Length: 261
Ligand SMILES: Nc1ncnc2c1ncn2[C@@H]1O[C@H](COP(=O)(O)OP(=O)(O)OP(=O)(O)O)[C@@H](O)[C@H]1O
Ligand SMILES: [Mg+2]
Image (tube, rainbow, N blue to C red; front, side, top):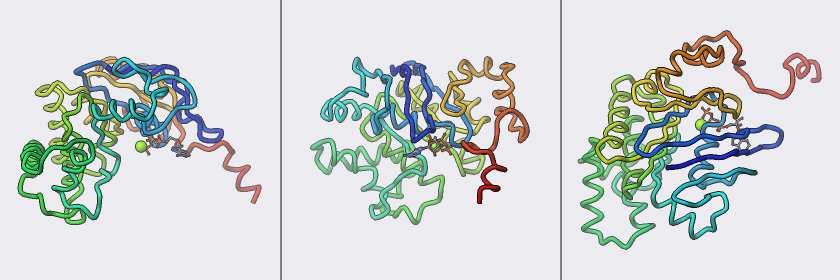
């Protein structure tokens, strides 16, 4: 469905994507795991054509998105849905207008039909009746669900979720997990989920990719990852504070930096 080849993206000296090669299969839920700053969001931005890599390719629907012109990219991106980290709702638009936005932007669907589509999407995320609420009046879990309704409003073939459950209580997390699964099984939507929630990942993933400082250190099924002997993978899935994964990522040694000032 989508294939990333030798992707490199640098910010200054830091390689946020360091020669990434992986594929995301049709009809599957692939979860990208990794600690904070490991390059998950950066990878998603490149896969959705929001940002161009320094080198490498992103193959989707027969073309390399990294070399596509504006018009082609725009057309391909209509087949993609995106739930941004932090939902990224428009604060000055109510729930209805937030969800209707992509339809107004990309189509000429008349208002009556827009209303029907928005109602259907709100029903899917369990928020019918919240049309007139403003984002500031929503709980964190509701915001994610509105973001999700907006992500699916164009009936995408693939949905990218950036941290769909972060900051949510276990029940809301379960609701979102179930929604992701349902969209995948009932509508056959391919899903790419960025997460650092291991439990949620194990519940929904068909395939897991683990990033570490911009590199892939492991990929495979839930069982393969659970049984990995790589100490970095073990530390990550067990949430251990001590181990090969450092908490901070800095070019300079801490002591050097302190002594310099
Ligand atoms: N636009 C940018 N300019 C400079 N550096 C950036 C930019 N975007 C990301 N980075 C850096 O790239 C690295 C990876 O960032 P990214 O946002 O992809 O991490 P992440 O895995 O999504 O982390 P988190 O789990 O905290 O969201 C970080 O060190 C970050 O500071
Ligand atoms: Mg991120």
